[in-house]
Length: 329
Ligand code: BTN
Image (cartoon, rainbow, N blue to C red; front, side, top):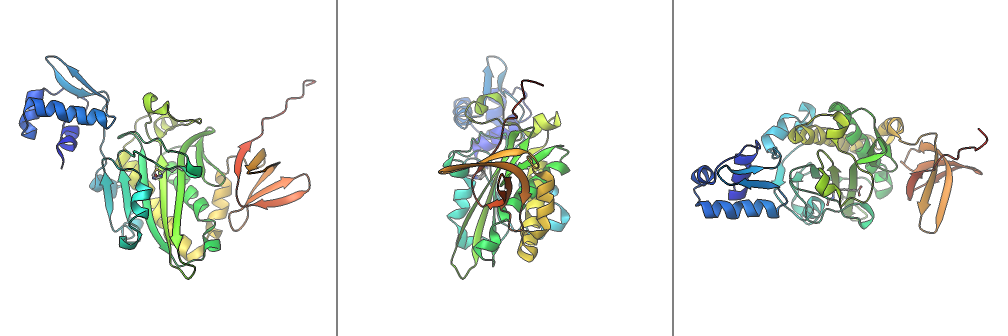
């Protein structure tokens, strides 16, 4: 374990520890402890230092631990999980797995306390401050063709919504294709990256960013309405438990998709559909189409009822159309 990680676990409960006692436990001089505190600050961890009292974290912190995560993985999924790797800091968990496709076993999980270049959909960054949320990537291999994989991102959305339900979050909803919302605010984002030859197999990296306790400072960088599990539940939650429940739901979903495709997930997706039966706009490069959201077809394509009938769409950005209020009413 690195010095900074040991220091973090000594300070994790949020209480003051003197530089002297920290130095004793770490086998470091007081000056070297101070340098390690600086290293934590560089990672984005807020630390206070008070003369005569020592050091403490601005808020208690629960670090991710493989054994604690494993304890929350559904028993039926444990045999689908070969390995969990946890990084204190990494550019992007998705990029890390995409660069190692040939060396990974199906079900391999990578988590990070912080991402320095978290990737979102459509080239957007994913804000990933230290120790606050879940940044997770999971590798899976399919012997399905690309058209057969078109509903996979939606099935993953259902897995995330169900994991949230297990955690006690009421009212999580999906915005096509797979944004996870709570009260119209983004709670989680899903990024699937794929690679493979036409003859297969297909390598898939499922990336999930799930806000647990975002905190005001880092949130300043987010350019859309957001929420986190702590707000949705109205209480603190263990990140290890969140990660374990999420991993269990994902593994079972990815394995079932190999056998049954999108079909068994379609109804559940529609139950979680944030906009079903509502007026929406679908924006894609060059055109905007308006209509009533009618769910998804058997492949996961969006069904929109427009003025001239029911149409399917395979890409675009959905948004709710503001309700026009009749001034006479
Ligand atoms: C979105 O834009 O909605 C998708 C966000 C996906 C973010 C996650 S965080 C873990 C994984 N690693 C990344 O770099 N991105 C995904």
